[in-house]
Length: 247
Image (cartoon, rainbow, N blue to C red; front, side):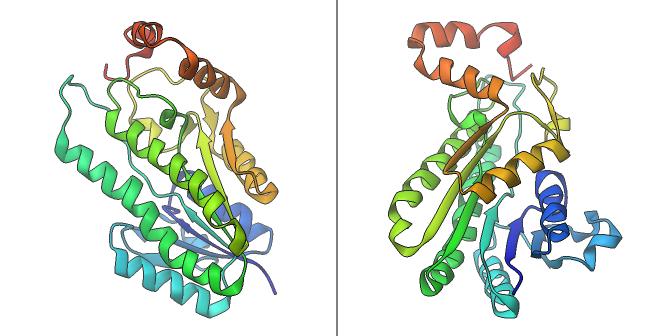
């Protein structure tokens, strides 16, 4: 029997590219998104599609359970997410709540039904799309950084808590990937990677069962250094023009 993967936020960007890679490999692929018209026509018939928002806990649960009942479930990837760079030094709490609802509660809403299924069958793989932004607080991206830090910590904890149930957990932390999400950015994006190359790297990490995958290596090194700098040095660097995410 072919393996099955369910990916949220898969109508565009990284999720869509991963869905294409997995269906090409013979996987049964389920995708969900808020607007399925974004999916190119040839792929709508190749994927099992569900139109919903990951903030709708009940609808997402029903979709994942339905997908499982139709042919099993091996991997669930919580990939849906949003970003919103701020041009103001003051946080926009309405936007902050929206980011948290999608980037954190959306992950929880995705993982909850999957964990129940995986626990019953004795195997499964949870994958959460985080970001290198989750390792440090970036200026102009407070909500996004906080939400991705939450995803990293959640995945790291689940990897320990669920291991005895046969459930693997992977946190994916990409740098800048050329997707519709990053096209909205008006700041510099060092080491920008094409979405197809990024998707191939992510799939390789998932297939290997990596617990934490940070890429590209240049961004992984930068974040490693920033996390270990004295706080006064970190704050100084983050005030420099090249680090200004709110410009």
